[in-house]
Length: 366
Length: 106
Ligand SMILES: Cc1cc2nc3c(=O)[nH]c(=O)nc-3n(C[C@H](O)[C@H](O)[C@H](O)COP(=O)(O)OP(=O)(O)OC[C@H]3O[C@@H](n4cnc5c(N)ncnc54)[C@H](O)[C@@H]3O)c2cc1C
Image 1 (spheres, chains in turn orange, brown):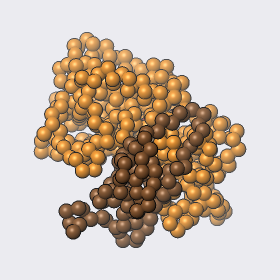
Image 2 (cartoon, rainbow over the protein chains, first blue to last red):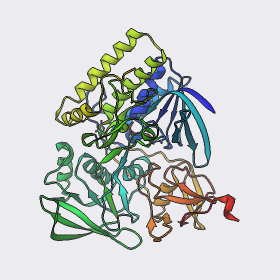
Image 3 (spheres, each protein chain N blue to C red):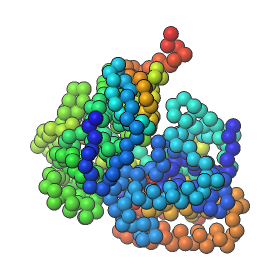
Image 4 (cartoon, chains in turn purple, red):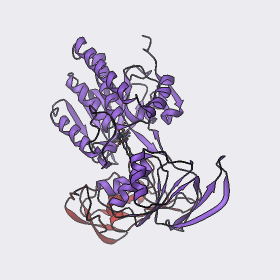
C-alpha cells in the first residue's frame, strides 16, 4: 500500500492549484490524473479567457495550463505526479483509494487528506440514435482537434448555443471544419456576446427555438432532423433535415462526484451548480473531515474560479495537517477569498452565489 | 492520416510515427496519442458493437468516463481507447459484445 500526506485526484486547474498550494506550505502531495497529460479542460482551450487579471484573463487557456505546469516543475520534490492513472474507488472501512494505471495495473493509496478535483462530465440529450458514432461531446471534439490535431469530421451540427457551443463552433471553423448549423432550444443565444458575434460574422445559421429530433444514419451519423419547438418546449411540426457527419453536443456539464458519494460526503442537488455537489465549508472541506473539493467537481463554474478554489482547498488541507504558520495561512485565505468574490461579482456570478448559499456551511461542527 | 495541417493558433507537435493494426489492417499513428485519436485520423469511426442490440459505438467523451470507445487491445477487452496511449505494433480490434478476459479466453 502506498502512503501520501495529501492525495489530489484530478490535475486540471483546480487540482494543480490545490497541489501547488499545499506543497508550497510544506505538504507532501500525490497527484493523479486519468488523462495522458495534465491541465484538464485547459489544454483544449485556444481562446483568450475571461475572468480577472490575477486569474490571467486575456491569456489563452492552454497557456494558463503551461504556466501552472511550470510552477509544478518547481515542486518536483514535493509533488509526485501520475498521469494515465484513474482513481477508481474509495473504501469506507479504511479510507483507502484504489487507482489504476492504464487499464490493468492497480494500486492502493492511503492519504491523510484528499482533494477531489475531478472536474465535470458532459450531458447528453435523449433522442433516437443518439448512440451512433458521430454524436460526440463538445469536449471530445476539442480534444481531437486542439490537442491531437485530428479533424473530427467534415460537417458539424452543433447542439447548444451557450459559450461552449459557440466557442467550439468557432474553433472548428479555425480547424477548417464546416458548421452546418447551431441548434438552440431557447429563444436567444446563451453565450457571451463576443463569441456570438464571431459566429454571426462567419454566416453560420443559428436555429433558435429548435431541438434535435433524431440522428440519421445506420452505422454512423449521416445527419439529423431538427424541429421547431414552442415556448413549452413541445415540437410544433416544422422539421428540417441537415446533412452532417458529426453531431456535437454542447448542452452543459455536470460535476463528476462518484467518489464523493462513495465516501459518504453529504451531497445536495443544486441546479445553479448543474447537479449534485458536496456540501462544503468556506475552505472547501466536505462533511467528511479528510476530504476537500474544488473546481467543476464542486459546481460547474469557470477555470478562474476553479484555480482559486483549488488554492483555498490547498491552504485548508495544509492547515489541518499543521503545515505552515497560522498568520501565513490566514493571509493567503483572505487574499483568495477576496479574489473569488471579485470573480463572482458580475451578472453570471449571481447565479453561482445563489447556488453556493444552498451548499455552503460556515464551519463543520467539531 | 487526416490531420489538421494549418492552424491560426496551434502549432501541433506530433510524436514519433509508428505502425499498428486495426482489425488486421496496418495503419499509421503517432506514438503516445490516444488510440482513439489515431483511429479517427485513419477514418475509423466504429469502435465496438453493443452486446444485445449490436449497435455501433464510437468516440464520445474522450475523458475515459463513458465506455463508448471500449476496444480489444493486444487481446485485452474493454480498453478505454480515448485515454490509452498508442504504442508501436499494437493490435487494436473492434470489440463485439462484452469481451472475454484473457484468463477465460482459451
Ligand atoms: C469550450 C470551453 C470554454 C471555456 N472557456 C472558459 C473561459 O473562457 N474562462 C474560464 O475561466 N473557464 C472556461 N471554461 C471552463 C473551464 O475550462 C473549467 O471550468 C475548468 O477547466 C474546471 O477545472 P477543473 O480543474 O475543476 O476540472 P477539469 O479541467 O475538468 O479537470 C479535471 C481533471 O480530473 C481528471 N479526473 C477526473 N476523474 C478522475 C479520476 N477518477 N481519477 C483521476 N483523474 C480524474 C480529468 O482527467 C481532468 O484532467 C471553458 C470550458 C470549455 C469546455
